[in-house]
Amino acid sequence: LRVRVEILGVGTELLLGQIANTNARWMSEELAGVGVDVEHHQVVGDNLDRIVAAMALSASRADVVVVTGGLGPTPDDITRDALASLLDTAMVRDPSIEEFLRHRFVELGRPMPEANLRQADVPIGAHVIMPRLGSAPGLVADAAGARLYLLPGVPAEMREMMTSTVLPELAGRAGARIVSRVLRCAEIGESRVAEILDDLFHASANPSVAYLASDGEVKVRLTAKAATDAEATLLIGPLLEAVRARLGDAVFTTADESLEQVVGRRLEEAGRHIAIAESLTGGGVATRLTRVPGASRYFRGAAVVYSAEAKRDVLGVSQATLDGPGAVSEACAREMAGNVRRLFDADVGLSLTGAAGPDAHAGAPAGTVWIGLDAGDERRARGLRVSGGRERVRRLAGLAALDLVRRHLEGRSLPGSDVHA
Ligand code: ATP
Ligand code: MG
Image (cartoon, rainbow, N blue to C red):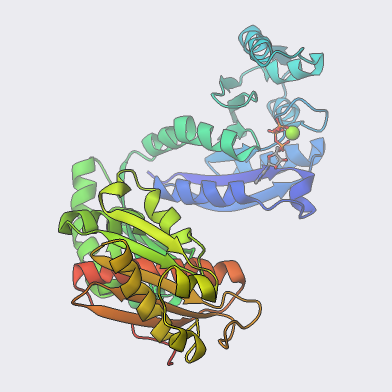
């Protein structure tokens, strides 16, 4: 059963560009995940007539309209008034919401402004979605041939209502069970992924293929619809294998795990311990690794050696290396990796050094990154040239470093160096 959905954002601040419509972005992704078709996005300012007109337009062409924003207590929050107008009914105060609101304020230990009771007003014919977060109740109503969901604008409150109420209802309405598998890849660009999967992307509607690049990673989501979970899973199987085979060594998970989870699991399976020497990333790679519960089973520790002196005095990088090739060099990364492995009595030493920018550092242009890996029997160094700002350089360096460890542990080929010392 095809369900056409339209997303309507309410808020003048969206039109003025003061905030980005991240609600629509998040909802679209989630809606695609449950197998409904988002056909339009609309945005309208805080103006009663225009909100009513926008709702009517959305309802005329979609089966379901998800509206966010304007459900708060302030006078510019008029989305519920617009719904009453569209339904051509009056509003009545809902005593259970009133009690809920009063109770909330008692818990907060503050008097409740009477104006807040506006949030207890419900157009006749609409139903209430009680909030678990925040205080704005959501509303559901059938009007103008469509079902309208009115959700709060605050992203966390909107997400909570989408996840608990809207998405399960719509998945059920689409008459389907939805199963998704997410493959995640590192060290491969989105355009390369698109090129590799192009024919699958176009040929396959069920299961469908979608990809999303974020933070230097590319996620590939395969979604299948079927009458049962088992059938949907069966549908995904061959496509999953095809995608995995094509993307090869770049795929680090087929179960939506983070790279640090995968690296941690691989280290633990191999019974090996890692230690890290970080310059460029200032401890960021250790932070990522220790996000995973149980990291102490394989993570020995990290040394943040930011200055040349710390590299020499704490880690024992030779003065000759610092004076010669310099702190941002293959030689320095190799020494750091070997020395940190010995210092922490670990099996694998990992190191990062580089010039995050905006200026050149230690003779290396901004964006130069060297990563070292020393596992005793296997030693590697990898140079990268990362464009973009300081944070991007640091983030992608961290990702590449963790991926270097992952490839080493899985016995996979390494992406080539793109900087030559
Ligand atoms: P409140 O009770 O806070 O008034 P509300 O339901 O009336 O909530 P708005 O007043 O429209 O919602 O928005 C509240 C806040 O939520 C905004 O200041 C904005 O930061 C955020 N917000 C609203 N709409 C969006 C959107 N489409 N995308 C991202 N953020 C949004
Ligand atoms: Mg508001």
